[in-house]
Length: 304
Image 1 (cartoon, rainbow, N blue to C red):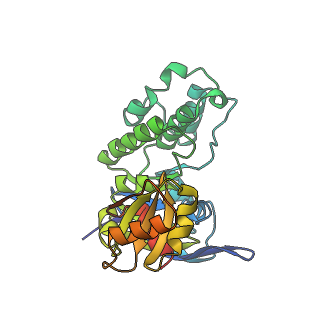
Image 2 (image 1 turned 60 degrees about the vertical axis):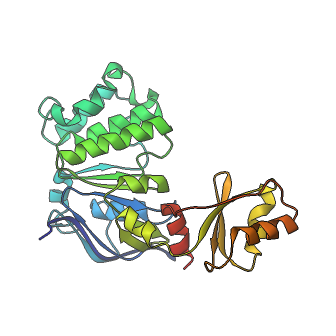
Image 3 (image 1 turned 45 degrees about the horizontal axis):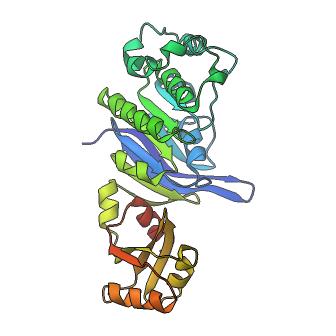
């Protein structure tokens, strides 16, 4: 029988007339790396603040390691690590001072739990006397993670930890998370980057306060049932509009330097698409059938 580290049950939250969360329910197994995937404004931060006892739910309930997020908030704060989306450490303290400060708050020392943060901290230790406010984005990220881990939490909540950092730092950060997971820590991470979904054990796709789907990433992509093509032409600016006017089109969205075109049925051939675009005065037409990724599935579910 699965043991759960986090359980959200029918959580809703509204700010005035804005419904931030709409009956959110999910559970996270102990030791799992669980991703909450969605764009800005989807409700990710509100949900994390509720689960970390920083915000009261409007309705519903949440449990972290069998403690209620409202009734047992003091106990929860001792067993979780939380890294908010905005850098919130003391910018006028040095790297070392910040780490010692957070260790002291939790009644421990850096030395006592150094094994847990060693692989992360060694990368910023050469800058231990630098003010936190003077660090680069990637270094701030590593310091914030070290501070969130210094008391050896059972559950780690990371709210958009890779937003605004370079691609190399993003890759390094996810490698760190995998290493932490191997040490038995349950990790919940939110991100607007769809490509990071594949690095999680399971994901919840969230949009406008509602969960669209919860499953393993490859199970979600397997359920994409529409024919999907990558399309490029010499007139990319007009391409999406022209494809949306095509009778067989289900959807057409810009993905990087191409358009991902979903069709209503399997009967439409690549030649028919090419003939249609040629008639619309497109040149250098390139069309290839592709497998759906998480972002394709997100757009499909959002518009279903």
